[in-house]
Image (cartoon, rainbow, N blue to C red; front, side, top):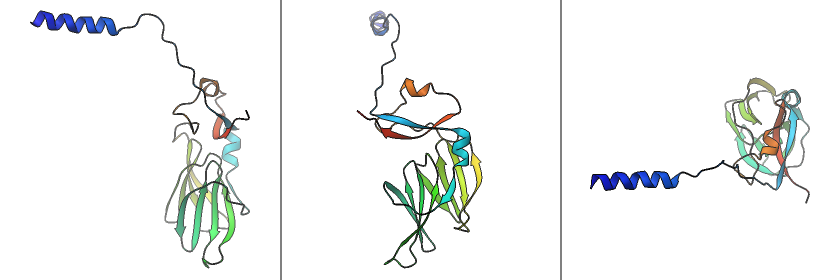
Length: 168
């Protein structure tokens, strides 16, 4: 009986092995990456004038203000001291921003692959107080779980800060 079991195991291992080369599947996406040089990405984080909210994501409320993330773009600052008349007071430009969190006066946000800590104690002069480079994996296309080879083989200093629909 043991010989038969061993023979069956050996046959299943033999039959499960596929001879020949492994061919990597071709991956297609309907998006193309938005690329930015690392130096440009790091220096582009700044406070700007308020702008229209187009693609809102997370919302945080603190001290009468709303902080609304916009995918791949940054964080909107809304003065909500009078909830009947909210005022869009500023926008923190953060290329590649997908997720945010807050603790105290510090806003934590991803800047594509980097983690930022931004001091919000003075909303007219927000400042990056810490950057941890390559804390996160590369941003993936919205319709795939991996980056197509055509985009994975980009120059090392080019960072994917977003994805846009391809023109078809």
